Length: 364
Image (cartoon, rainbow, N blue to C red; front, side, top):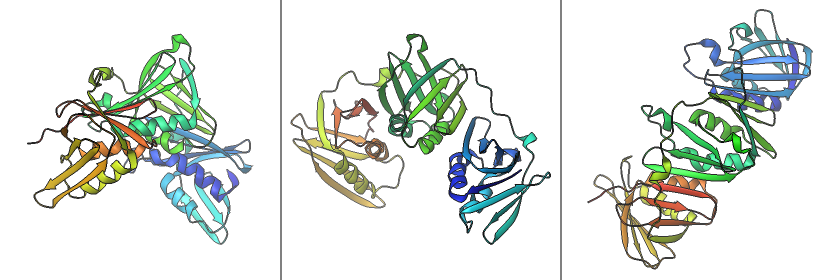
C-alpha cells in the first residue's frame, strides 16, 4: 500500500475516528485504526466492538492495499509532521513508512485480517433530520444520562420516534432532560431505541456542517450516516422507564430568569462547595431569586438575581451541578423555573420544546 495525502486531511479524519479507541483494551487490534486505500480514497475505521466509526477521504493512491496502525500514536505522529504533504507506504509485514519533509519514521502495524469486520446491518426503519438540529438535541439532553452501570438502561439516550416527532430523553433518576423535534416519518416506523452514551458522545463530536443526518434502526443496532461519516452501534437492551410520570403535570409558580445571569451566579456560589452531594439553597421572593451556599470547612456565599415573579415565597434546595447543567447547554436568553413547593420537583423550560426536571434536596 502506498499513498500521498495532505496532513490536515488525515488529521481531520483521524480525529473523527480515534476517540472510541480504548487505552487498555484486551485485544491489541482494537487500539488500531484500519486503513484501506483504493479507488482514489483512504478509508479509516475504528471499533471497540460496541461502536464502529468509518470515514473516507480523497488521497493520491499509488498502490492499493490495507493495514492497521496504532490509532493514537499515528494521530500524534501526523499532528507533529513538519510538512503539509505526507507520503505513507506499507510493507507486506505491515510496517508503515511515514515521510513528511525532513521527517521519516517506521511504525509497526498489525494485519488487517485480525481487525473485526464492520457489523452487518439489516435496516428496519430510516429517519432524516438536519445535522445541526440533531447535534443540538443531543447536547441539550446527554449530560443527564446515568453513569451508574447497575442501571444499564439509563446509561444512554432514549430516542422515541412517534407521532411525527423524535423525543429524546436522558435521566439518572435525580434529573431528566427532554427535547422534542418534529420529523417526517411513516406511521409504521414508530419505535423506541436507547443509544449508549459513548455513541452519543461520538455523534456530538462528529456532527458538523450543513446537510442532513440519516438514522437507521434495526432490532439490535442503530446506524448514523452524514457527510463522509458512518457510525454503527449496538443498542442498550431493555425497556426504558416511564419518564412521563416524573414530569409534573403542572406547577403552581413560574419564574422568568435571565439564563446567563443565573448560570454565572450558580457558578460563583458553588465555589464555596467541594462536596458532590452539596446543595444550593434557592430563596424566591417577589422579583428576586437568592442563591445561598455554605460549607463548614470552606465558608459561605450568597448572590441575588433579579427575576420576573409575583407569586408566593418559596425556598428550595438543588444540587448546584444539576442546576447548572442545562443552563450551560441552552442558548435561550430567558429560562423559566416552575415550582410548586420545597418538596416537589422543579422544572426548567425555555421557548423551545425542551424541559428539564430536577429533584429537590431536603435540607434542614
